[in-house]
Image (cartoon, rainbow, N blue to C red):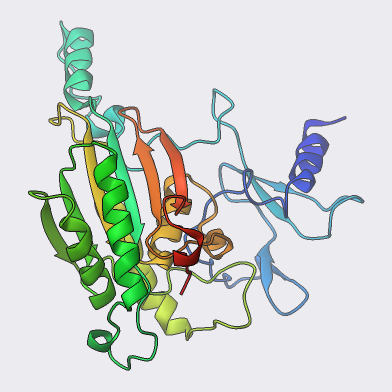
Length: 311
Protein backbone atom coordinates (compact mmCIF):
# COMPACT_ATOMS: atom_id res chain seq x y z
CA UNK A 1 0.00 0.00 0.00
CA UNK A 2 1.42 3.41 -0.92
CA UNK A 3 2.07 6.04 1.71
CA UNK A 4 -0.47 8.36 0.07
CA UNK A 5 -3.12 5.62 0.13
CA UNK A 6 -2.33 4.76 3.76
CA UNK A 7 -2.72 8.37 4.82
CA UNK A 8 -6.00 8.62 2.98
CA UNK A 9 -7.35 5.54 4.74
CA UNK A 10 -6.14 6.83 8.10
CA UNK A 11 -7.93 10.11 7.50
CA UNK A 12 -11.15 8.25 6.75
CA UNK A 13 -10.85 6.32 9.99
CA UNK A 14 -11.34 9.49 12.03
CA UNK A 15 -14.64 11.28 12.51
CA UNK A 16 -14.68 13.37 9.39
CA UNK A 17 -10.91 13.06 9.04
CA UNK A 18 -10.38 16.43 10.66
CA UNK A 19 -9.68 16.08 14.37
CA UNK A 20 -6.05 14.96 14.40
CA UNK A 21 -4.83 15.06 10.84
CA UNK A 22 -6.15 18.36 9.56
CA UNK A 23 -4.00 21.45 9.51
CA UNK A 24 -5.47 24.02 11.93
CA UNK A 25 -6.84 27.04 10.11
CA UNK A 26 -8.28 29.98 12.04
CA UNK A 27 -11.28 31.02 10.00
CA UNK A 28 -12.31 29.91 6.53
CA UNK A 29 -9.99 30.85 3.70
CA UNK A 30 -11.53 32.86 0.87
CA UNK A 31 -11.46 31.39 -2.60
CA UNK A 32 -8.74 32.88 -4.79
CA UNK A 33 -9.36 34.28 -8.20
CA UNK A 34 -7.71 32.72 -11.21
CA UNK A 35 -9.38 29.32 -11.25
CA UNK A 36 -7.47 27.74 -8.34
CA UNK A 37 -10.64 26.52 -6.59
CA UNK A 38 -13.05 23.76 -7.44
CA UNK A 39 -16.80 23.87 -6.71
CA UNK A 40 -18.22 21.70 -3.98
CA UNK A 41 -21.83 20.58 -3.73
CA UNK A 42 -23.71 23.41 -2.07
CA UNK A 43 -21.63 26.17 -3.60
CA UNK A 44 -18.49 26.04 -1.44
CA UNK A 45 -15.05 25.50 -2.89
CA UNK A 46 -11.94 23.49 -2.15
CA UNK A 47 -8.44 24.33 -3.34
CA UNK A 48 -7.21 22.24 -6.24
CA UNK A 49 -3.53 22.48 -5.33
CA UNK A 50 -1.88 21.99 -1.98
CA UNK A 51 -0.01 24.95 -0.46
CA UNK A 52 3.62 24.40 0.55
CA UNK A 53 4.02 21.92 3.39
CA UNK A 54 0.60 20.31 2.92
CA UNK A 55 -0.38 17.11 1.18
CA UNK A 56 -3.62 17.04 -0.81
CA UNK A 57 -5.30 13.66 -0.57
CA UNK A 58 -7.36 12.52 -3.53
CA UNK A 59 -10.83 10.96 -3.03
CA UNK A 60 -10.83 7.20 -2.54
CA UNK A 61 -13.45 4.54 -2.94
CA UNK A 62 -13.82 4.21 0.83
CA UNK A 63 -13.90 7.97 1.53
CA UNK A 64 -16.48 10.60 0.65
CA UNK A 65 -15.43 12.57 -2.47
CA UNK A 66 -14.27 15.52 -0.36
CA UNK A 67 -10.65 16.62 -0.43
CA UNK A 68 -8.83 16.63 2.93
CA UNK A 69 -5.70 18.48 3.94
CA UNK A 70 -3.01 16.53 5.75
CA UNK A 71 -0.05 18.32 7.24
CA UNK A 72 3.28 16.82 6.26
CA UNK A 73 4.97 15.33 9.34
CA UNK A 74 8.05 17.10 10.69
CA UNK A 75 11.37 15.34 11.12
CA UNK A 76 10.12 13.60 14.26
CA UNK A 77 6.90 12.50 12.62
CA UNK A 78 4.92 14.81 14.93
CA UNK A 79 2.06 17.10 13.94
CA UNK A 80 2.52 19.34 16.98
CA UNK A 81 3.67 22.91 16.31
CA UNK A 82 6.21 23.46 19.07
CA UNK A 83 6.31 27.19 18.35
CA UNK A 84 2.53 27.67 18.60
CA UNK A 85 2.91 30.55 21.08
CA UNK A 86 5.95 32.05 19.30
CA UNK A 87 8.03 31.48 22.44
CA UNK A 88 10.18 28.57 21.29
CA UNK A 89 13.76 29.55 22.28
CA UNK A 90 15.20 28.99 18.80
CA UNK A 91 12.59 31.35 17.40
CA UNK A 92 13.53 34.11 19.85
CA UNK A 93 17.19 34.50 18.93
CA UNK A 94 19.05 35.49 15.79
CA UNK A 95 21.17 32.50 14.83
CA UNK A 96 23.26 34.63 12.47
CA UNK A 97 24.64 36.70 15.35
CA UNK A 98 27.10 34.09 16.62
CA UNK A 99 30.50 35.03 17.99
CA UNK A 100 33.26 33.86 15.67
CA UNK A 101 35.24 32.01 18.36
CA UNK A 102 32.70 31.07 21.03
CA UNK A 103 29.67 30.78 18.80
CA UNK A 104 28.39 27.44 20.11
CA UNK A 105 28.84 28.37 23.76
CA UNK A 106 27.21 31.74 23.24
CA UNK A 107 24.29 30.13 21.39
CA UNK A 108 23.74 27.62 24.20
CA UNK A 109 23.79 30.44 26.75
CA UNK A 110 21.32 32.51 24.80
CA UNK A 111 19.00 29.54 24.31
CA UNK A 112 19.07 28.80 28.03
CA UNK A 113 18.29 32.44 28.77
CA UNK A 114 15.15 32.21 26.59
CA UNK A 115 13.86 28.89 27.92
CA UNK A 116 10.84 28.83 30.19
CA UNK A 117 11.46 27.17 33.56
CA UNK A 118 8.01 27.11 35.15
CA UNK A 119 4.67 25.48 34.39
CA UNK A 120 1.50 27.52 34.03
CA UNK A 121 -1.77 26.13 35.35
CA UNK A 122 -4.76 27.82 33.71
CA UNK A 123 -8.18 27.39 35.37
CA UNK A 124 -10.97 28.47 33.02
CA UNK A 125 -14.23 29.03 34.92
CA UNK A 126 -17.54 29.44 33.16
CA UNK A 127 -19.82 32.02 34.82
CA UNK A 128 -22.79 30.81 36.85
CA UNK A 129 -26.45 30.73 35.77
CA UNK A 130 -27.81 34.19 34.99
CA UNK A 131 -31.05 35.97 34.12
CA UNK A 132 -31.68 35.25 30.46
CA UNK A 133 -34.53 37.78 30.27
CA UNK A 134 -32.26 40.78 30.78
CA UNK A 135 -32.24 43.06 27.75
CA UNK A 136 -28.90 44.69 28.48
CA UNK A 137 -25.75 43.21 29.99
CA UNK A 138 -26.29 45.05 33.28
CA UNK A 139 -29.66 43.30 33.62
CA UNK A 140 -28.23 39.82 33.09
CA UNK A 141 -27.35 39.25 36.71
CA UNK A 142 -26.87 35.91 38.42
CA UNK A 143 -29.95 34.00 39.53
CA UNK A 144 -30.18 32.74 43.12
CA UNK A 145 -29.11 29.33 41.83
CA UNK A 146 -26.25 30.98 39.95
CA UNK A 147 -25.00 32.53 43.15
CA UNK A 148 -25.10 29.12 44.81
CA UNK A 149 -23.10 27.67 41.92
CA UNK A 150 -20.45 30.38 42.27
CA UNK A 151 -20.17 29.61 45.98
CA UNK A 152 -19.64 25.93 45.20
CA UNK A 153 -17.02 26.75 42.56
CA UNK A 154 -15.20 29.06 44.95
CA UNK A 155 -15.15 26.40 47.66
CA UNK A 156 -13.85 23.84 45.18
CA UNK A 157 -11.00 26.10 44.05
CA UNK A 158 -10.09 26.90 47.66
CA UNK A 159 -10.08 23.20 48.57
CA UNK A 160 -7.33 22.55 46.01
CA UNK A 161 -4.85 24.23 48.36
CA UNK A 162 -3.10 26.08 45.55
CA UNK A 163 -1.50 29.50 45.73
CA UNK A 164 -3.44 31.30 43.01
CA UNK A 165 -1.65 34.25 41.47
CA UNK A 166 -4.57 36.17 40.01
CA UNK A 167 -8.16 36.07 38.76
CA UNK A 168 -8.68 37.57 35.32
CA UNK A 169 -12.35 37.91 34.40
CA UNK A 170 -14.60 39.08 31.61
CA UNK A 171 -16.04 42.55 32.13
CA UNK A 172 -19.58 41.28 31.50
CA UNK A 173 -21.93 41.38 34.50
CA UNK A 174 -22.44 37.64 34.94
CA UNK A 175 -18.69 36.98 34.89
CA UNK A 176 -17.94 39.88 37.22
CA UNK A 177 -20.54 38.72 39.76
CA UNK A 178 -19.24 35.14 39.56
CA UNK A 179 -15.73 36.44 40.21
CA UNK A 180 -16.81 38.45 43.24
CA UNK A 181 -18.37 35.39 44.88
CA UNK A 182 -15.44 33.09 44.03
CA UNK A 183 -12.90 35.62 45.30
CA UNK A 184 -14.46 35.54 48.78
CA UNK A 185 -13.07 32.02 49.08
CA UNK A 186 -9.64 33.12 47.80
CA UNK A 187 -8.76 36.16 49.92
CA UNK A 188 -5.82 38.22 48.80
CA UNK A 189 -5.88 37.06 45.16
CA UNK A 190 -5.95 40.12 42.90
CA UNK A 191 -8.75 40.53 40.35
CA UNK A 192 -8.31 41.97 36.85
CA UNK A 193 -11.17 42.80 34.49
CA UNK A 194 -10.76 42.67 30.70
CA UNK A 195 -12.97 43.17 27.66
CA UNK A 196 -10.98 40.58 25.70
CA UNK A 197 -12.75 37.73 27.51
CA UNK A 198 -16.29 38.94 26.82
CA UNK A 199 -18.67 36.43 25.23
CA UNK A 200 -18.99 36.29 21.46
CA UNK A 201 -18.89 34.21 18.30
CA UNK A 202 -15.26 33.03 17.89
CA UNK A 203 -15.45 31.25 14.54
CA UNK A 204 -18.18 29.70 12.42
CA UNK A 205 -18.77 26.23 13.88
CA UNK A 206 -18.47 23.07 11.84
CA UNK A 207 -20.90 21.35 11.69
CA UNK A 208 -23.27 24.32 11.88
CA UNK A 209 -26.25 24.40 14.22
CA UNK A 210 -29.74 25.52 13.31
CA UNK A 211 -30.66 27.19 16.62
CA UNK A 212 -27.72 29.63 16.71
CA UNK A 213 -26.78 31.61 13.61
CA UNK A 214 -25.21 34.98 14.33
CA UNK A 215 -24.52 37.44 11.55
CA UNK A 216 -21.26 36.92 9.66
CA UNK A 217 -19.99 40.29 10.91
CA UNK A 218 -20.20 38.99 14.49
CA UNK A 219 -17.70 36.22 13.71
CA UNK A 220 -15.50 38.83 12.06
CA UNK A 221 -15.54 41.19 15.03
CA UNK A 222 -15.73 38.76 17.95
CA UNK A 223 -13.37 36.23 16.40
CA UNK A 224 -10.47 38.67 16.24
CA UNK A 225 -10.99 39.71 19.85
CA UNK A 226 -11.27 36.17 21.21
CA UNK A 227 -8.22 35.10 19.22
CA UNK A 228 -6.42 38.09 20.73
CA UNK A 229 -7.44 36.87 24.18
CA UNK A 230 -5.97 33.47 23.41
CA UNK A 231 -2.67 34.92 22.21
CA UNK A 232 -2.45 37.33 25.12
CA UNK A 233 -3.24 34.92 27.96
CA UNK A 234 -2.50 31.38 26.76
CA UNK A 235 1.22 30.71 26.30
CA UNK A 236 4.14 29.14 28.11
CA UNK A 237 5.64 30.92 31.11
CA UNK A 238 8.00 33.83 30.68
CA UNK A 239 11.67 32.88 30.97
CA UNK A 240 11.96 35.10 34.06
CA UNK A 241 9.24 33.15 35.91
CA UNK A 242 10.92 30.86 38.44
CA UNK A 243 7.97 29.11 40.11
CA UNK A 244 4.87 27.40 38.73
CA UNK A 245 1.84 29.67 38.51
CA UNK A 246 -1.88 29.07 39.09
CA UNK A 247 -4.21 31.49 37.34
CA UNK A 248 -7.99 31.69 37.19
CA UNK A 249 -9.91 33.04 34.20
CA UNK A 250 -13.65 33.62 34.70
CA UNK A 251 -15.39 34.03 31.38
CA UNK A 252 -17.85 32.36 28.99
CA UNK A 253 -18.58 29.04 27.33
CA UNK A 254 -17.77 30.10 23.76
CA UNK A 255 -14.50 31.71 24.82
CA UNK A 256 -13.41 28.71 26.89
CA UNK A 257 -14.29 26.17 24.22
CA UNK A 258 -12.39 28.09 21.57
CA UNK A 259 -9.36 28.51 23.83
CA UNK A 260 -9.30 24.76 24.57
CA UNK A 261 -9.35 23.88 20.87
CA UNK A 262 -6.61 26.38 20.05
CA UNK A 263 -4.41 25.36 22.99
CA UNK A 264 -4.62 21.66 22.07
CA UNK A 265 -4.16 22.48 18.36
CA UNK A 266 -7.48 20.91 17.50
CA UNK A 267 -9.48 22.42 14.60
CA UNK A 268 -10.93 25.57 16.22
CA UNK A 269 -14.14 25.34 14.19
CA UNK A 270 -15.01 22.32 16.35
CA UNK A 271 -15.47 24.46 19.47
CA UNK A 272 -19.25 24.06 19.52
CA UNK A 273 -18.92 20.28 19.87
CA UNK A 274 -17.84 20.84 23.48
CA UNK A 275 -20.35 21.50 26.24
CA UNK A 276 -19.77 23.33 29.54
CA UNK A 277 -21.93 23.60 32.65
CA UNK A 278 -22.36 26.84 34.57
CA UNK A 279 -19.65 27.32 37.16
CA UNK A 280 -17.57 24.53 35.66
CA UNK A 281 -13.78 24.27 35.94
CA UNK A 282 -11.52 23.56 32.96
CA UNK A 283 -7.85 23.02 33.78
CA UNK A 284 -5.12 23.54 31.17
CA UNK A 285 -1.43 22.90 31.87
CA UNK A 286 1.29 24.57 29.80
CA UNK A 287 4.74 23.05 30.32
CA UNK A 288 8.03 24.95 29.94
CA UNK A 289 8.67 23.15 26.63
CA UNK A 290 5.35 24.42 25.26
CA UNK A 291 3.47 21.14 25.54
CA UNK A 292 -0.16 21.55 26.60
CA UNK A 293 -2.33 19.11 28.54
CA UNK A 294 -6.02 19.23 29.43
CA UNK A 295 -6.48 18.04 33.02
CA UNK A 296 -10.23 18.62 33.25
CA UNK A 297 -12.91 19.94 30.88
CA UNK A 298 -16.06 21.49 32.34
CA UNK A 299 -15.80 19.76 35.71
CA UNK A 300 -18.87 20.17 37.96
CA UNK A 301 -18.48 16.95 39.92
CA UNK A 302 -18.26 19.04 43.08
CA UNK A 303 -21.88 20.25 42.60
CA UNK A 304 -25.01 18.35 43.67
CA UNK A 305 -26.96 17.13 40.61
CA UNK A 306 -29.84 19.54 41.29
CA UNK A 307 -27.45 22.53 41.11
CA UNK A 308 -26.08 21.77 37.64
CA UNK A 309 -27.26 23.87 34.66
CA UNK A 310 -25.99 24.86 31.21
CA UNK A 311 -27.78 28.15 30.49
